[in-house]
Image 1: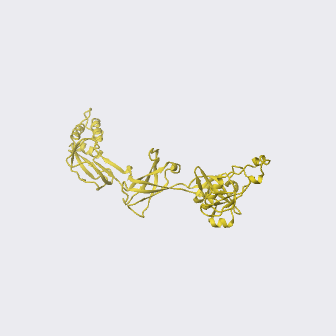
Image 2: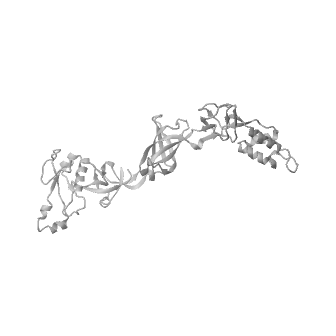
Image 3: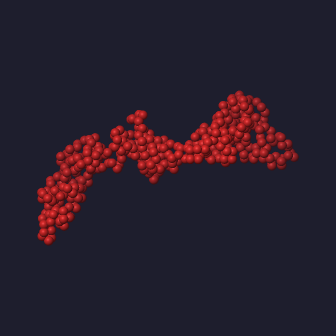
Length: 386
């Protein structure tokens, strides 16, 4: 169904019927191209030739509108009987004509009609996309100082880790140096009074250095209490997930801020879909969507429009739309190809007609009105949602 805005349908009301037979559409399309003489022009020519001659009926082929005769006969192409087209002298020359068809012709052409309805109409956007990580659930494991990897516990991609699980230890000369400064600052402050490790003013600078290295507060307090430096920095998993990237080996030297691990939680994933330019107005956040992948036939995943890229791709003329999909069983994997269906908001109080009743010819869109008693008339419309 599609919604339409017409100049004539409004006036005739919703009870008018639309002819949706292909044969009669072609026929009436040809009729629409013919021009009826203006009565005023006929009057001015009455002295030269009779009005009846100007209103002489013509005969056309319903299937081949280019076949026009001024007398009855048969179409030289398909052999069908030519149909009489009467000219109404009271019609304006730019009005589309009303054509009379005999009942047997209507039956032969298989003319079907449908009523114009006023109601609700919605359009689903069907497109494609691909599965991507939920970047809010992805972490890179780094450390802010250089050193040597020791006691590497996770040595391959695909292993799952829990939050807080020890991944490795890093031997760092800089870490040892800062610890010694931190321990020395615990003895006395400028007043010569021994305070608790957490309140010492001289411990602020080395404590900040330890924080910059990613040393936890609990470990800093332990170092202050014990007065003994640790030789290695423990590196823990920042979240639950799966190791999807591993860039280190045991006993390897790494620079500061080097991405050693990438850990991703696949319990939620993104699907990046393409929406064409003419569909942009129908898409907004929180719309419901549905995702299917070829790897899991028959299974559908509920999704929601999470983000809309504000910039259009100049090459494909599409807009990237990010869908948030729950993936509790970890069945969806990044880079899977996905079929996406976005359910847009329905529109109310729209005129609806069957899709096959709309005739699109170049820049014109028309429908055929059934005026009863075998009379049909084409009317130009502007279609909306399909």
